[in-house]
Length: 114
Length: 114
Image (cartoon, rainbow over all chains, first blue to last red):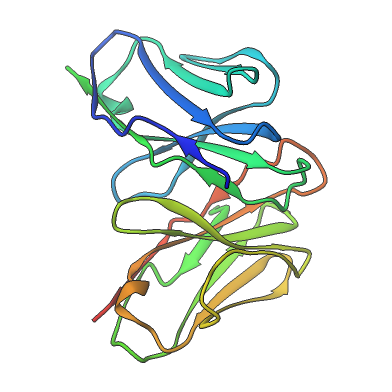
């Protein structure tokens, strides 16, 4: 059973601070890891993906992966009110083939306080 | 240009009816998916198609039948609709042949069964 766990929140962070979102997954065979952002009533929007241990930075976003601990995180620096959304962690399990579906966590609701 | 599009955006119908949702992508991807997001916002894979071939068929009632006329289109037909089918259905696409297989989502179809 593939499982992806996230704290549902809400996670409240002051504007300008660093927001830290965490995710754990159950299947050690997981190959690729994704962070999506979903605003209320909208579709999931891809923010970042990571598949190697360590950090990956893209603008204000940093994804961190630790396969030994089966842990992936997303850091958002200089948080803005527009970052307020639900953040979904997703895992592609299997042989890494592109036809595998993504297993999603239930999402963390992030609120950036002005 | 819309990368992944779905029609209709909203669908209200009565129990027992049959309905279809259409999806098209212009990203040149060869793999398409259907996801269901329930009232608790949990996003779950239903089907994946690679080059018109069914790859994944999760535990979905056989009232749901996907059809892929070509690799740019994936439609979802639902027979004998039930109250529990009410949800938001998202289409997504990705490229199978190159990793890490990030998926891009359509705007969603909100299905309400009364």
